[in-house]
Length: 442
Image (tube, rainbow, N blue to C red):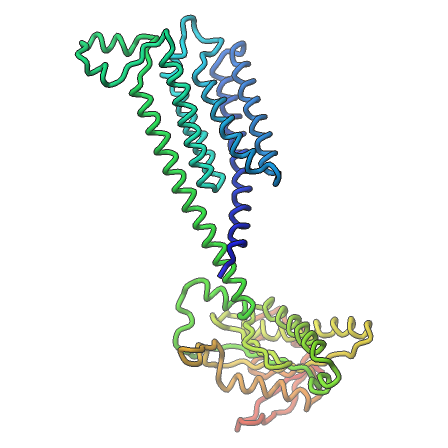
């Protein structure tokens, strides 16, 4: 399970990123409004609009800067919502100095400027915080309602609602009332309030669902991370994909590699338990890193031995070539490691590697209580015997001719590695009646 702290940290990161998106999104919106003001309004009148837009942008920059500070983040974010809503409402309610003569605040309430409050709320959805969205919606509704009612209750205003319209006025009187520059419709306020409520609720639900997706994503990544400690990356990808790739065992072609530390028993006798574990961890880590880099699946560690297969869970057209290249790279990594060990006064490590290519049985082995994804068959046995054979013929790498033929056919980039190998005599490996042709690295 993922800890609550890890989930909280992930959500906090998303909220901080959301604040950045909101800031830059608002800057783009403000820039668009400024450009529209310059193009639509004469230059002598657009200066005030542009100045107001620039001031609002600077205010948002201040809010964003304080929100990124761990000390003032919460207070700044929530406080500036109130300031932003108040400034926007004031701009939308107060008549412009450049308005035509006789223009009133009552007429301002009829303009579509109110819709920009909806844009303001939509921008809050980028914060990934349902609580902040609800807070922004509530603040916007309260501030807008106060401003609207302030205009409606002015002595020069004529406020009307449904009761007045249904009170027996003639059609001409209703039209005259609605068109009167001093009239304020309380019906419009109810519609606008409902609009803001609906926008707030929908955005809050959308952000809440987004947070759920983030939580699921964090949990999935944590599970992948936990699985990667016990399975190879390609197995983790297969498990995470949700496919039924690990059904009944099946027959397929794969390359099998065994690598074993030479003289491990002798080495372990001279080491303390802690030093022995440290040695094995570094040894396994170096070989496993090479195996993963070549697309191999680490099947198991058996003491100092590592078993890797190529072509599982999904076969590839160059599995034999990958296995041969992996074996050569493992030897190179051991050589580099030995340079470090000798420089620090430690003994060099020798390794024997055996690789074979052929048909194997791949799948889950075991019962319902414990399943193991592994490979079985003659190919596995031969690869293990080839690894043991390296001691007998005095080499660090022994491969079957079957693997060599397949690798040559699969890749043209193995020239140096193949040229290094030399043919040995036919060997009768233990547990097998027919001998196999072996190539080795001198």
